[in-house]
Structures are given as structure tokens and as C-alpha cells.
Length: 264
Image 1 (cartoon, rainbow, N blue to C red):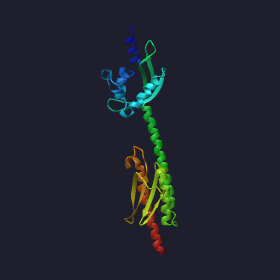
Image 2: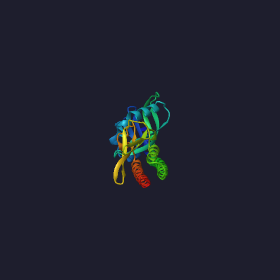
Image 3: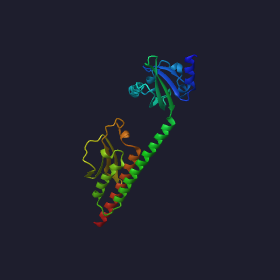
Image 4: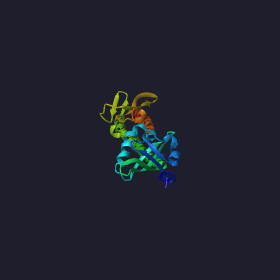
């Protein structure tokens, strides 16, 4: 029996993605499904480093170490990882790994059989995003409801009302623990915390009877690398929420001042 021909046939008949590479990561074999899903042909891939071709640069060392650590266990191990296709798409793969050994039992290469779970992962991520969106909406609705109740209390003074608004507002944002809301009206200011430093600030003017008399701002102190700008620190829903609350404040201040003027 031609063992090489037999091995190649098994690879091609497999219903999963099949690839073999040596202990340096150089690709030895791959089946047609690998070619079909990634857009690469085996003549392009043979001898190339698997990790350089398929793994994003920032993840290569971690994925390489993780994979070869599992191979040292000698048995079959599992790994969930993503790969990049030739045209830049991301595929999510569930891998089963098995070291191939020589007659002395020394590992000489790694056999990987994978299942494309991209559709499932994207569906799961969609559900997570949908859940997160609902949580954000619930927080915003709760905040707006509480503020509306405050603003509808016609007997509460302007400064007392705005101070309570400032303390309610951070709870509607992504990172309430490191978020501060501040209301400025004429020469009066109220803040929800004593925090001084803030890496990002979002603000809206308080336009009362078409005249700007102050501002409503939200500041957040974040050290995450994905929040290097206001675009990363705040989502669009939060910006819209701040605009809505600023308009509500302007209306209630105008009404309360009008009522006070009539009393006088």
C-alpha cells in the first residue's frame, strides 16, 4: 500500500478542514476544504509558516505557544481560534490537534482537523450585541424616567432639580463608576463627584429661551486602549441621551423661572 497516497486520500475525504505542519509551523499538507475556505491553494501554502499566513500579527506568538503547548500533551486536544482568509475575512474554527510521531515516539508534526463555526459565532455575537443594546436602552429609559419625574416636580427649586439630575445621569452610561456628570447654569455649578481628571468629555449647551446659559457635560476617565478618543469612550446612544437631557433641562429651567417671575 502506498501510505502517502492513502494519507492524502484520507485528508481529501475528510468533512473537516485538515492541515499538517511541522514543529516550526511550516505547512506540509492541507485539503481542498482548507483551500476553498481560505482562498489559498496548496502550492501557495506549502512550506509557508501557518501562523504568519493565517494568524493576525498581534496574536501570532500567543496562538503559536498555546498550540504547541497542547501538542506536548501527546493526546488529542481542542482549540478554538480564528484565522484570516486570503481576502481578509475572519473565520472561526474549532480545532482538534494531534501530534504525529516517528517510530521512537518523538513528535515530528501536528495534524489539525477543524470545523468552520463562523456562522454560529457571528450569530452568537449578534445575540450578545442585541442583549447589550437592550441593556443600554433599559439604563437610558430608567434614567430618562427618573429625570422626567424630577423635572415634573414644579415645586422643587431649579438648583435642587439640576443637582439631582447630575447624580442620576452617570448611571445611564457604559462606565458609571468612572463617569461624572456636571451641570453649569450661569455662575452655578454642580457635579456628581469630586473627580477632577477625565480623559474624555462629552457636552451639550443649555439653550434657555434661545440663549446659552450653561452646559451639561459627562466626563469619563478610561485607560483602555480602545478608548483613545471620544468616539471610543462614548457610544452614539449616549450622545443622543445627553442631547435629550440637555433639552429637558433647558425647558424646565425656562418654565420654573417663568413661574418664579409671575410670583414676583
